[in-house]
Image (tube, one colour):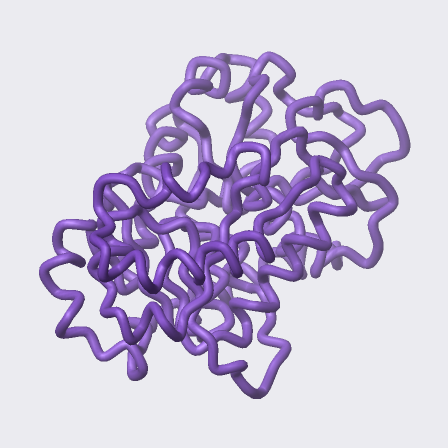
Length: 307
């Protein structure tokens, strides 16, 4: 048996973070296969972990019979629902059940079609903490301007801004700051933004480079004192690393988050704006309870490899 790892045509390094989580279970990576073209693989029988978001080209589903899949942390995009609930897809799911789903909604959808499925949580919850000490830093990752403006200035002064957006699509400072940031906040944000976003935004669509960039970002979160973010694929690795994290998003009821939000210090921008001054940013603890979910994921992946 050989082993395959997902790769992606997107610029979203959250995808690479998913592959880093899967890679830690593989004895080796014999090949990479594009997530959106799994049906086109023809080659040696290979085990592959199918975790994450599916898919931009659902017409290329189900995967090749030359792939032996493990379904954990699987999420079906709403735009692809018809393809993933077709007779052909459902037969494929049933052959490889049970299907571990990243969110409660995906599990409910598949169960509604008679597929043995369950909520597994996200595989990034099993990432390993590689550091014994923090670097003392606060990272603010792709936060909306309203929430950014609500953070106390003394916290901003001790923060670095990161972005998972590629350089080509990252807005200019004027756009970034427009609307919400008053002059007293801009005094702090301008130099912080210019220094840290220039340092941290990524600039590649090459898989190897994106994997290195994703790992670099994970290393930052691993060692941070605190992370404040709007991105789930930042917040969940922080839980794995036991890094305090604040998750801020307009729609905490988003189906992608079902079953996961309860493990996070989660706010809407409106609630965060109201509560920000009362938060003790240097003594935040995560809600806890995620270790059971993480342990089950680890066991499932290891059993798949050992079979």
